[in-house]
Image (cartoon, rainbow, N blue to C red):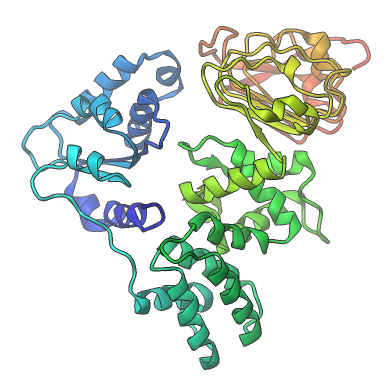
Length: 467
């Protein structure tokens, strides 16, 4: 069952100092429901730290499998495969884990008993249990009050709320995050208790509805920030630098007093973390959040709410869904499928954000078709060399593209561009070497950030008319 604490328990074991000392190599990767064997191997190699950009772009799945095998061979290792959904996924990767009889271990988390039984050996299957009433209250109390004291008059109603969550840790933590932001008055807690009770049935609990209760109590500025996180793929942690820049480009973040927009955005993210709707992945050396993620059930709720409110449209593999019949509602479009027909001609003049991960889309851009487009995030397009179409996107604030060669003249006409992200990829998907940034781009009036992994230098400015 989702939300019962499988990943939390596995993470506690994985991060334990004695475990870290015991195993020479440790790696953690998320599998997810729509598994990608290549991404599983890349996740392991990234966790071990033996992969670079060139390997990621140029290696086949078989080559990555061989690299994983060689990285583990002869070493005592611990591999965590989190959120496995099918026996097929396990069978695709199991041969890359050498058995040297040296005490190496593989930990697999799954909701499905048949998957766990297929992968386990001996009596190594651990079945998670629900929280007791006392454990539910303790978890709720700690989430709301921390280590401090609490008003004794709230204990009775607090225990009732914990009991209504039916022992599911994720639901308890989500409600605790909600209560932590509310007034500590009996009437407020009784109101929450009534809402939780109304979401229960006699036999089961719809956890997504419990999570939606936390979402519904968010202030509007946090709702938009939260829903926007659905544009990121499930299997990868979200880079906070990118999330914040997208929030700002969309206009979700408003300046507060003397604080700059980035600081306000970080505070918004921290509040979502405090409400247990977002999980922290990694921290920077200064203690700030570097990456974040969502529990898969929270993400399911996020996608459900985003589509219900027409906030984001997620393109399906064949894209014959009802939303395309009335494409005036397509404000934001995200497509992470490899084989979809992703022609932008299907979209709408009111589309504001476009995210495409794979190269199978025809990029026909013009101001007449996309006059409100603010964000264009394309990882592997082969069609962005139409400089005229790019230059017409006068409202564009955030552009992520594989390369900028041949686009300089067009970029200089984008007077509202704030963030430029260069993936350093050849038009045919190959990794490119370091590129020189022209001065004309750097001098754009509203440009705030340039993000590129391979930056060499500025080259001598050239004359470009009307730039």
